[in-house]
Length: 308
Length: 307
Image 1 (cartoon, each protein chain N blue to C red):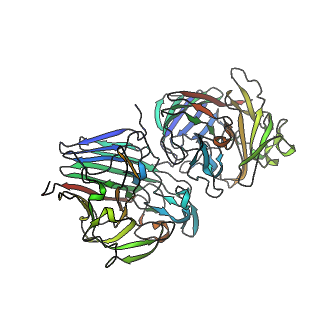
Image 2: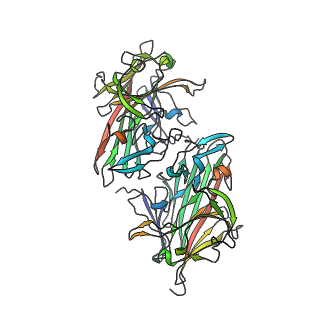
Image 3: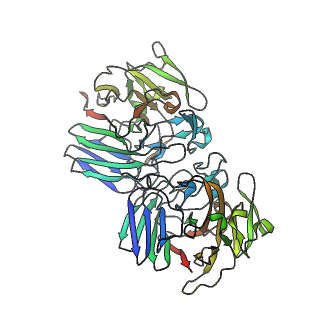
């Protein structure tokens, strides 16, 4: 039977189990020892609030769905119509192809073809590999065109600590700065978080947070490092780690996330290689020369708490 | 070499050759005995002005990208940002999967997943078959949702007759009405054809400036074809390229441009686009097929070259 999320892939190493769908290379669910580390995406519907999808060749919004390439205006499709922006790249409605498969890993690929506002040809891929205690996600791109091309990537997982409600858990982010957004949710300034309600380095209750916020200046950035975590009352932790190429985390805590049990609070922690509107600001945008490849990883792991 | 039009399929039957790319299931070229019936999409290029691409699950525009489904507003992505509309369906950058391929035919398929403004899951496909005098193209869709879903389809071929300058070709469209549009090219009504848009007796393409949907087509009978000839281009030497459309294809869009990119520089080109529904059909309902769960639809059009 064909499902809305396309062909489905189950990765299982006996300890961790991930389900992936071909549509937007969506991470449908991740469990370690049966404990859910992410929200679950139904097979027959649009992933709610972007849950689990890949955001490429840019995460978040491009202001006015316009940017400038060597002085020439580029107009992208408007995919956040309410705010007049182009959101979350070009692959949201793309059915990825399987490129490689094993019991514990799958690589899904999608060509990004020249189109309105995007005069580039890129190969892109994502590899999901389950680890004993979690998941490693590797994003890649190769410029197949004859001109240099911009590239950024993000992902949109909503994390959990098993069946603990989001309101019960503590969210920590090892970030020194955060972007201030205007009414269209686009960045206008970057501020130090010290002494503000955005300083989550020691953690804060998700119930007390209302975030749709990009965090930057993540700690320990010359090597793969843990940068964010969710901790349940029993001490169990879901920890997000990033390669240095992932320089930003978008934290999003909607109160209206649809689940099988009704509408709930959820916590997205979106690894991003570049901040919102990077096609305009140039911030942390990678420029790939013809034939050049880019690859970087993020991942998540689970540790059962001492009080479990 | 990576083509911007995706993987390449080469179809051949007798003296007829076609090249199809998997992106938007584009018909890149079509020749009969070395005579081009369409404007080719050059190697290394994306289709100019939508040349040869498939337009599904609707052709042309949805005003403001908004429509109503059982009273509930639906907001599509705006894929014509300059005019604020949703243009040419949801598959213009989709990489179709090759489902079947023989020497002279190929079937390409694309899933249309639920997305902004489109709460349906459809399977869709295109079958290209080259024949002695041209090509037969069959489009299909099946509703994989648990609710009924709308479907319409069109394609965007630019026609020519070999190397004859397009300005010198005579275009005939046996249509009695056209869709009047506003400055954003959205429909404001269906009118009887007036002088600039009366193509029933044939007009020189060099004298036309059109981006117009024609209706009430009275197709000319064509042997072996259900439906009939809905448009034809004739060269001064008498050679003719004919577009035929099956019975469900009651509309044809004609688009002329003076800026079609060619190796020798920009020039005149004419798209003659078979469509099952007129512009803004998601709002008017005109020509829309409503598919019940599991229901499928198929319809065909084609091009032929005659002396």
